[in-house]
Image 1 (cartoon, rainbow, N blue to C red):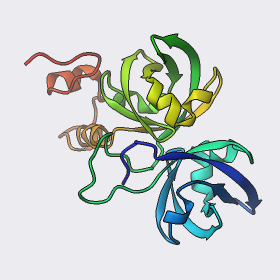
Image 2 (cartoon, one colour):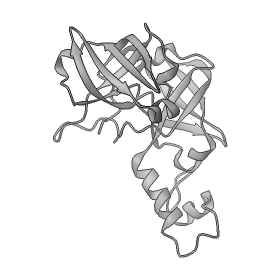
Image 3 (cartoon, helix red, strand yellow):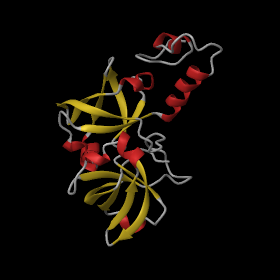
Length: 221
């Protein structure tokens, strides 16, 4: 379990294909604080540390992970966002993040907004019910708040501290990004999708609104 508060960035040293898998080695300031078998979030993807060297750690990326994340698109020399797991008793400054990527989105536009940036990201249609205005979402492992959304995109505001501490400063139009929707929202949607007496009617925003779950705006009580 993670919080979406990136500890630091690392650099991919090697990314080697081995059959259907990838052997990944990352240089990072936190490498010496990791141990074999521990989880670490790499650009929002929960991986298991398989080895550690001087200032580096290694992980094996499975075919399933490669099929639904951006890791296979990366190259040696690329920066990655890194976060170690949350410990019981640690402050939860972001939101609950599992490191289980739900899909890959695409940055469509980046513009300056005050001292930060405003970013518009296109998301896969299957995530639509879980992307809620003013709700949380993890993008490349970073906990962000959805400022605005339409049928196929959402917007987030990046403050200067986020740009300084993560690799989100590198985003450009066309950048693919890992998306993990809010875990609690995912379970709420799944509950209504599978727990209703009849599954003949589709889950809609109107249905969620009638049951007290805001979509485009907070539902009045």
